[in-house]
Length: 170
Image (tube, rainbow, N blue to C red; front, side, top):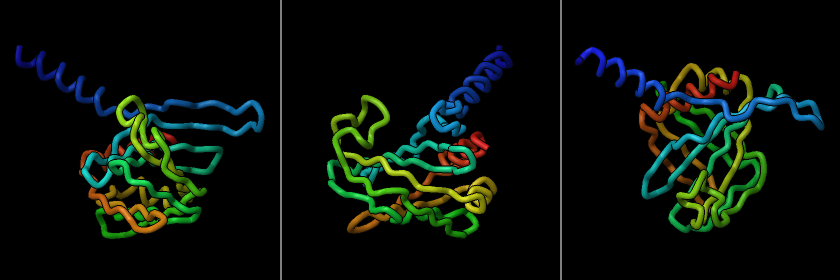
């Protein structure tokens, strides 16, 4: 009995932590190969609730963040930085793709938070950064905004899921 419970528990744990590809197709207009992961929660703190997903469009990797800060209005300018501190203390700096500002529901990935102010912003990841991020887990992030920055600690379990999601879209 104990053995079967352990097997069921292990299988359930694998299912809960399994990352999935949510899209994998060739765009019929420009022939770009687009691959995306599902949204995953990164942080749930009073400072910010963040979710992310990875995309690969042909050979370009992108991380898209959705951020909610308790009703605060803010923006992220084109080329503002997302700094990722790795467990080996190395810093990976990504640049935002375009200007984004908060709007109602923009930081939400579903019903929860859909009536709150949030933002959706994307950052390019080059091949060297991809290699660093798939070989080391993240311990902390700093999101630069128009007038400040947000520092967030990343729990080890969430960092491993993030790393596995990035590996998944290779």
